[in-house]
Image (cartoon, rainbow, N blue to C red):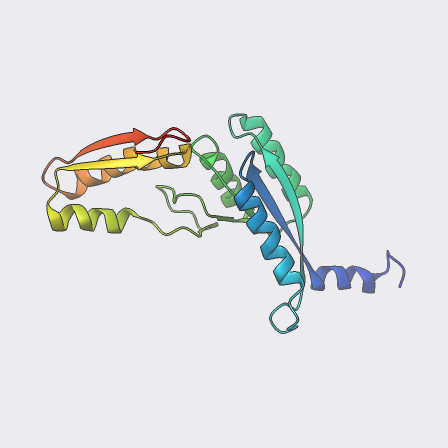
Length: 185
């Protein structure tokens, strides 16, 4: 078949799906997991489990630079990706979720869930909100320590504080501690 024939193009469209990957620099674990998942899917011996191959397009982003995040997302979109697997933090969450909603591209992420709901964001990490609020309510705690070691955890304290104030009649004090890398408690 010639590379520009209609049959060849149909073969490409029906047996390959382009998926994007947007990874924050120095997130090696997530990037390795993404590559392993693509590899395991594409090399599955059972054709009914994997009737198509996934073709990854990966960009590394610096989340402090909103232009770079926008450029990386547009690059993914121009490549024709059906979904983007990626991470976000407090600096890039709104940019990525708004692009996904506007362009109807799914964002699959292991990052902490966001405050707002988005039709095109699939959270792999469950929301801790219900579990934490149940603990606060059951034990009637008035103080709560929130310990985190990356900026991924920075989304939670303000959200929990506002949510608890709306949910409970009592005041709950949050103590927020950022653990520096290598420091043990």
